[in-house]
Image 1 (cartoon, rainbow, N blue to C red):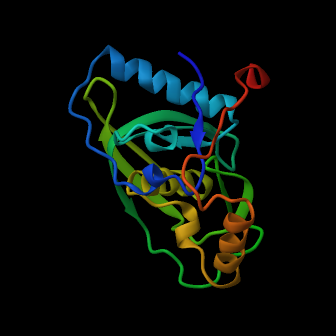
Image 2 (cartoon, helix red, strand yellow; image 1 turned 30 degrees about the vertical axis):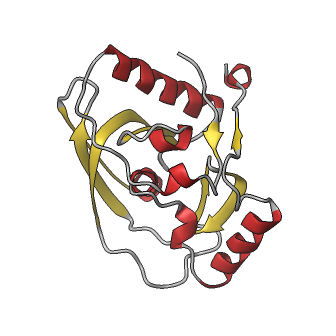
Length: 187
């Protein structure tokens, strides 16, 4: 298992809806291991398969919530439920969100405070992840990826304008950009 290159905003594969997983074998388990290795090397909270160029509906997460409790797992073919998303402008401090496909950038993003994702694991057994706050944000963020959406698509007002400028300035409006996390840095 190893870290893989992470696609950067502008790559058309990030805008495609993921394909449901139907084959549960050792290759799938190895791939999930690569997702975890890549997420760890990048010091991410979560990573979706399409962020490393794979169209399957899979994401991993590995983070600590506000109370310091570690949440780690993977979900295949996820289905998301949430509480209501606030319609007000996101708080510039409490609602900051980043993404491994938008490296080095953070923008206030409105999200529901509660989320539940159901799906299956690498053996096809039913799994469920549920949480509030930061963990809920992560579940929504990774599920969005598998629907072909970056968190940048949820931005509003001045944050949306700032993100558009940033993408243009960094030349991320062109396909084919990626970065390789340093696996030795996280070891």
